[in-house]
Structures are given as C-alpha cells and as structure tokens.
Length: 155
Ligand code: RB5
Image 1 (cartoon, rainbow, N blue to C red):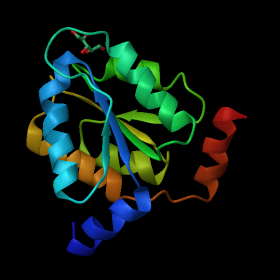
Image 2: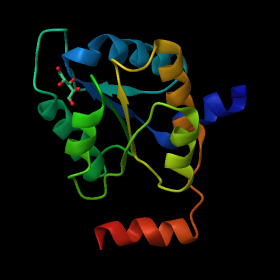
Image 3: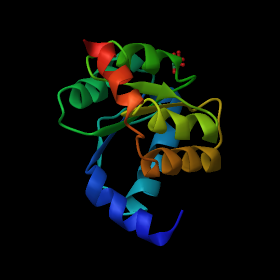
Image 4: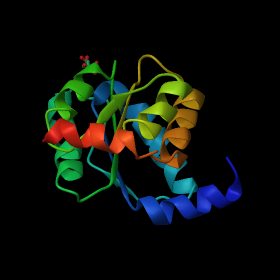
C-alpha cells in the first residue's frame, strides 16, 4: 500500500472500534499498535487480558456501536472468528466478514461493503492479520448493483 493511502484513509474512515475475547487478546493488542502506528484512532473495548471472558459481550459492544453509526468500521477477534461473526451479524446494518485470506478481505469491501472485519486469532499469524486489516481498510466499496443488494439485507 502506498504512503498516500496510509495517510488519507484514517481521516476518511475515522476512529476504528476493536474488540476481542481472551483467545485473541494478544493479536488485538498487536493490531491496535499496527493501526496506531499508521495514524488511525482506535477505540478498544477489551478484553483487557488473557483471562477467560465471554466473546459475546465484546462482540455486542463493537457491533452495537457500528450498528448505531458511532463508528464506520470495527474489528472483532476471537479464537476462530466464528462466535464474533455470529454475534455481530445479528445487529442491523452490520455486515461482518470473517476473513483469513486477502482475496476475501478485499471482496468483503468491494461487493459487501463489510463494516466489521472478523478474524480468528488461533488461525492466522500476525503478519497475515496486518495485511488483512490493511487491505480491508484501504479497499473501497464498488457500489452500483452491490449497493442495491446490501440495502435489501435490512429492508
Ligand atoms: C474461546 O475458547 C472460543 O470459544 C472463542 O474464542 C471463539 O472461538 C468462539 O467462537
């Protein structure tokens, strides 16, 4: 990604809300630092340690904030990403995409306008996670026929 994108996108996207459970606490901290180093403002709702918690509590916090329009983008992490995906997609206007490959991360933006990126901390390494986050943040929604399709989800 070029330097211009990494500077302009934080201003366009605005603050990013991030949450995890204990299983992905370490990866959440690394992603948070990655985002901060690239100029993004990050709101971290926890978890705050590797002590066992219920992923649902943290998924709800992030999904609710995105659903209500307080944040345009959110990132959720748990062991597999499955639990967070299930929780987040219960919220109106949330389009949460569980991604572990770059093509899916890109297409989740181009065709689905995904507003929450979900990853499994027990599935992917740090470098892939950073690349998924960067791709997802810097890829624009195509609109057009895809806008009609995503609008029909909530109608
Ligand atoms: C925690 O053990 C695990 O169940 C959780 O991180 C997540 O993978 C649930 O879907």
